[in-house]
Structures are given as C-alpha cells and as structure tokens.
Amino acid sequence: MSDVRHVLVLPDRDAAQEVAEELPDRFGVAEEPQLVRDALAGEDDAEDAQWLVVVEDPDGSLDPKALDALAAEYEGWLEAP
Image (cartoon, rainbow, N blue to C red; front, side, top):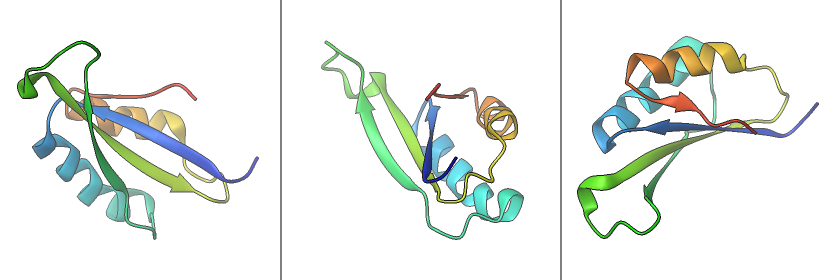
C-alpha cells in the first residue's frame, strides 16, 4: 500500500490548526498537512463549515486508528478512505 492520503475532519479552523501542528510531533509527518475549509452541502452559513486536514502518507506508515484518536481529541474524526 503506497501513496495514501488521510483526511481528518474537524469542527473548526482552530481545531484543524492544532491537529496539523500535532502531526509532526506525534507521527513524524514530514510534509506539512493541508488545511481545507469544507462547507457543508446546502449550508450558506460560514459557521457550519468543517475543516479538513489532509495528510499525505507516501509510504503508508501512519496508523489510521491513531490518526482517528488524535482527531477525536478535537471532536473530529478520520474520514474513511
């Protein structure tokens, strides 16, 4: 398994930024994760936007359960591939 991309879904920008900052320390992620605002379908209210943290995992070495646990600390989750 190679060139995996993990997507963590977080409730707000602050949580997404904190998770992105935790990734290098906890998982040794070398490439900076991408932060992406994801407006919920049909919602115009900016408050209803979720934030995605996209983590490239070129050698498939990151543990999805551990990533999910990290996201859960910030009331988020790991999107199923």
